[in-house]
Image 1: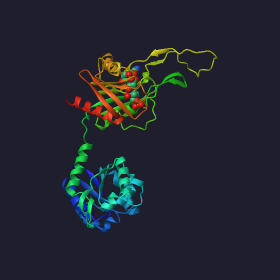
Image 2: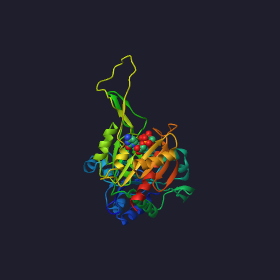
Image 3: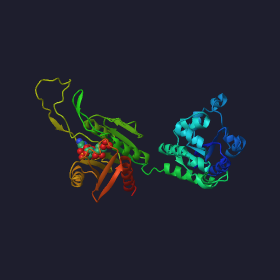
Image 4: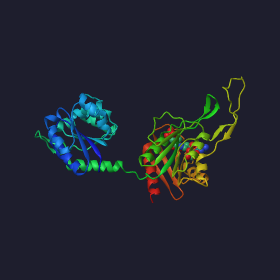
Length: 398
Ligand code: PMT
């Protein structure tokens, strides 16, 4: 934990005395701790005692021009690896839930993109209060982590849930959290993922395409990146926000997608999740087609098969080639046939007959390798990405 920087926010509760011991324990583990003390927190512990134990100055004021000049409040969160709020009162929890920024602590919590860990401490009735529980749920949904609270005797004489977790356990949980974040089993790997539909233009404004949203491919790309792989996502047109990957290449047609894939080689892993149009327009028109009063014919010409091309390359073939099979019938047989026809290593077959996968949140996979098959139940697309990436990790690390 050498050099890990914790911004430690102390709010106003009787459990604030445990913060001093928590700071001491964190420093014993070589964390660098800088504290922010709220006004009500300073009713319980003093800046002097915190400074003596943390070895760093304590920050309290939002509108202090001298402080802002030396250390802007945004800078305080930028320079930290993690923000810890301990004790966290019902008040600060509700401020975070509602986005209220009316002092230094709440402003920092709103202005940060760093992980936040909240250690609640309050009377049992305040903890069980419906509004506190609603706010806790909101924070959890927003990705904020919680340590505790514990059950036991309270400072007010009551008994129940709401006690602040003991300092030793807080530090253990923080270390576990950091280890989890640093879990990068694919850190030496590079990956290419295709996602979304392709568009095959008929004339400058009309095209053939499909309803793929890109959700499944984006989820896989982000998961691979999260596990440490340098990931290039090659995406057809989607309405999804910018994914967290090393490189995003936006394309329209199957030809462009193939070119982008080949230009992104070498790669260790390739996952073809895009719904690539099998055909393009052979007689594409260069200006907007006008009505003629007669029926018209479009001639379709087969597109290159990206998955097959990459899988059958003589040089620079990715070590692990993974495709999907979108089938409306005979899912299992067709997925197995596609695996051998396209020459890839794994296929994720999905039944798209009820239009229940394209642009939806869930997927039901029939997983095929050369050695075995597996039925995965109904899962969110993120869960499919997790399960697939777990398999990729195991495969490449053995
Ligand atoms: O994008 P979403 O809304 O989240 O939906 C996800 C999905 C249904 C698009 C995805 O799960 C999926 O099944 N993608 C593959 C769709 C498809 O084109 O299936 P296919 O059976 O026609 O193709 C088989 C494989 O060959 C696929 O890996 C495909 O990417 C690839 N292919 C197909 C044609 C082609 N010209 N080039 C290819 O690389």
